[in-house]
Length: 126
Image 1 (tube, rainbow, N blue to C red):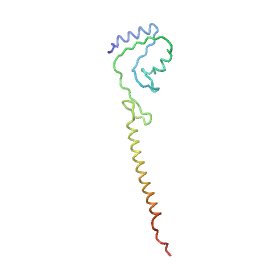
Image 2: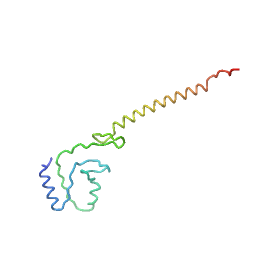
Image 3: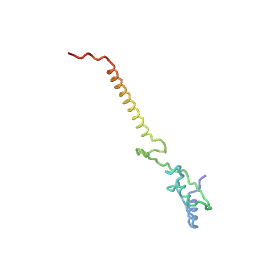
Image 4: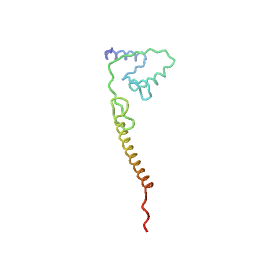
């Protein structure tokens, strides 16, 4: 159920006139601190101001929130939703393959050296 935005605006105006605080924005979870966020306000931190007080909360749904882009904190790739960064995942997989290849080459080199050291050496020339 959604409330008509005009009615919601009137309710907010009346609420402000009587001294109430009005917060508005897209409701998101989690915020950077892991709490609920409404617009730019971290609700966990914000509601701490009202601890041990009697409150009345009026929630007025105005419609679906717009999608918010999420930026990878490592490479800066912009994603549609929070989660594992596909770019970082591909880079990590490529690097893992490179390391495996280098390890195989190193193992072959050590085996060649070991065979050389264990093998029959020709007698020294006189």
